Image (cartoon, rainbow, N blue to C red; front, side, top):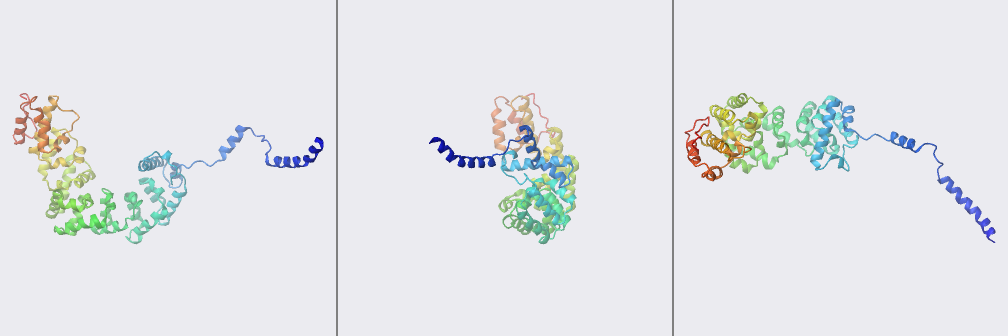
Length: 398
């Protein structure tokens, strides 16, 4: 009986074995290592932004290396994590960059134009074409910018354009400054102007200036010398003594006088025009200080305190402090305390100069009256203007 059962099931077994033979591949004669080599060698190479910048954008290898590093660093900074941890990025393949380059080419930008734009802002390659296309078209059709002007704008304002449509801002600011060329100069120093609300910030500030009697030309001059002024909230502008001092200077001084003041700072400090412009934008009341007063303060800060020109320009509030009432007396106190070992050598003069009068006396004079008995009298003498500008004061008796 058992043999008969085996014979009866034999056809079914043979039929199933046939299926297994079809489903199972024959052993490969290729060595496993060879198969691994073949599979990896035929796989597409991972996308390299650096190579793409060379091949598609025409950048030199050194430029491409620097630009790709800049793109990854900015992307990581914006996301708050290393680029390697991104699960997805529009810089991980050529798809989005290709679409963006096609957009720029369609707008008439040459290969050299595109290379310049990408070098200035490599992250622009990850911009969503469906969002940035209408923004670029608005600059062309609404504002009336030519292709060369669009290129020049992208070299300055592409980062803002990536996030918002700024055609209305550009159109309005051209009317304020008088030309696209002048606006570009301002934007090189303050691109944040393009992010400020026209209705809530910029236009109300312009209206305030008109109310104070400034003409359109005066406003253009003032806001060119201090482009951050239009970025301030209107409430701050109304209450800012510094702001209205600058307004007074522009309203009553000629353009030549203001330009001469800027040139004086540039030549006296031996710095770049852009550095002076930045300092003035932080503190426009500098324009209202006479050249003689500026010169005396610069001489003291450089020769006596030992501050560098760039350091001074980065802290323009130093120009606003009285030389006789604050800078010289406090430097005298600083020298005495340093000589006695009562002041941290890392403490900067700028920090001491910033304190209000009562706070300064409490922290640096009254607290040392036992260890330096004559310090209060010496400070009072210096504060009364009895100490020469070189800050020399008799310290042997202290």
